[in-house]
Image 1 (spheres, helix red, strand yellow):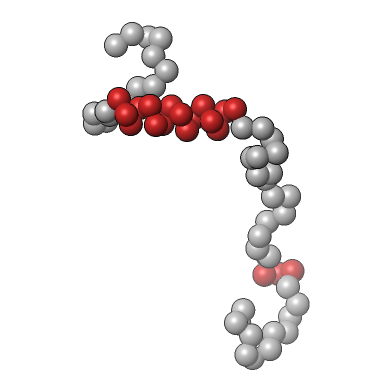
Image 2 (image 1 turned 135 degrees about the vertical axis):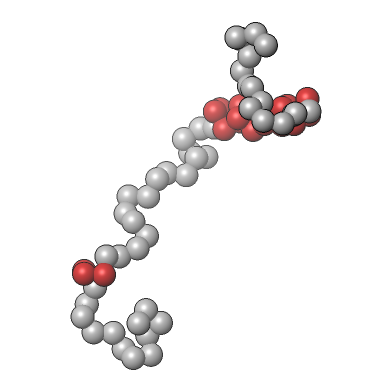
Length: 63
């Protein structure tokens, strides 16, 4: 194996079609513009329990 290869199969045997597919996916991802790539969230999607109000209704699903 030469040292100038871009992809290397660590385990198993990849067919040329499989290598072509993963190469196409990686190239498309690298060429994506910032508008097509979702931005990271600025806030967590969950809340810390110590910052929630003390009372919850008995029928609340958040119990």
